[in-house]
Length: 323
Image 1 (cartoon, rainbow, N blue to C red):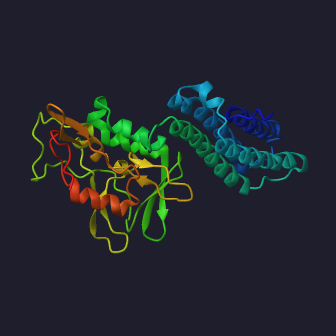
Image 2 (cartoon, rainbow, N blue to C red):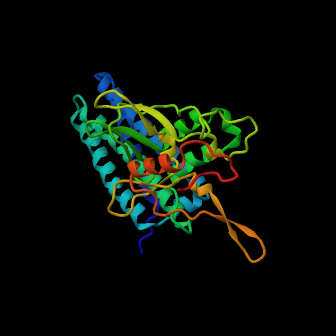
Image 3 (cartoon, rainbow, N blue to C red):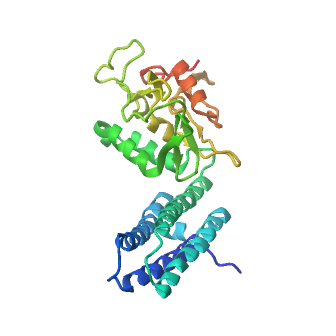
C-alpha cells in the first residue's frame, strides 16, 4: 500500500536539501570563490522557504495535519517529480565534493528554479484542498487571500498597499510577449494578461460617483464598492495613456483555469454583491444576483463588462448597475 502524502514527500525533499547543505558546510572553504558561497546561501534560503511554506500554508486549509496528510493525486505527482529533481541536483554536489575544483555556477540557477517550483507545488497542494471544500465554482485560494485583504475594514486606510503586497505574495508579474504584462498565480498557474501595457501601475484612479463627484462622507458602501476598479496605464506600443483594470481587482477575483487551459477566468466582485427584489408570497423578497459562475474568459471581456456596468461607485442600495 502506498503511504505517500504531501508531508512525506516534502520530508524527502527536505532531506535532499539537508544532504546538499551538509556537503557544502563541511567542504574545505580555503579555495572558495563567490560562486561557492552564493550556492551555499541559495541552498539555505531554499530550505528556509520550504519550511516557512510548510508552516504557513496549512493555516489556509484547516491546519497542519489536514495539509500534511493530504493524498490528492495531482499534488503527489507534482511532489514526486520534485523529489527526483532535487535528488539529482544534490548528486551534483556529492560528485563535486569527491572531485574538487570550482563549483559549476549553472547549479545556482538550477537551485533558484527548483526553489520556485517547490514553492508553487506547495501552494497548488493547498489550493486543491481549498477547492475540494467549496460547493460551487469559486475563487482560487491565491485570489481569496487578496480578496480578504480588500474586504478587511481595519485595513481600509492602507488597503491599496496591503492588496498590492498580498498580490505579490500569491504570484508573480512578468512580461508577456512583446507588449503585454501577465500575472501568474502560484496557487493555480492561471495567467491574467494585460495586453499592450508598458508596466503595471501600482495605484487605482481616484474613487468617484457616476456623476464624477467624490463620494459623500458617510455613504454606506461595501468594501468592494469603496474603491474603483480603474487604473491608468500606458501603452507599450506608443506610450499613450490608457484605462486598465487595477491588477489586485483582477487577482482577487480569478478562478483556476479549466483543465487544459492557461488563462484564469474572472468573477465580477460588484455583481457578486448585487441583489434584486422579487415578489414573494406576501411581500418583495431580496434575492442575490446570480452571475455566471464560469466568469469572464479574459481581461478584455472583464473590462468591457466593467465599463458597461460598473463605471463608478454606486450606493449600496443597489450596489451595482447591471445592464
